[in-house]
Amino acid sequence: MSENAAILVAGGTGLRMNTGVPKQFLLLSGQPILMHTIRIFHQFDPGMTLFVTLPGSHIPYWEQLCRNHTFNIPHHIIKGGDTRFGSVKNALEQISGEGLVAIHDGVRPLVRSER
Image (cartoon, rainbow, N blue to C red; front, side, top):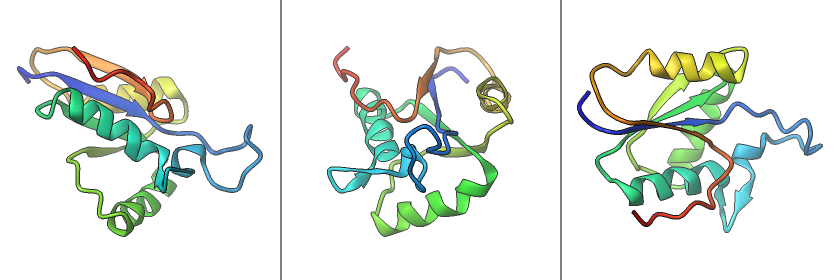
């Protein structure tokens, strides 16, 4: 890899928020929060490789949300680990070569896209 990458960790279950829906899937302005986070990283650098880590049981739901919202920003879905560390490790194992890697919380979409 001679390009930049971002790992967006989205393994929450919504337990602390006391909701049945994991917080990364809660709607913000009509779309799941995770979609907003992916979009801001894509806007910053459309060539950046995006990895999203999710619990294995959440992957089919995320894929359905992407279809329902016609969300087609390219990203790789990685099955997360038992912990945040494990999720990041799983995504890092998909990266080879040189480049910068950002690790960011998938439910934090309010970052600046300016360079």
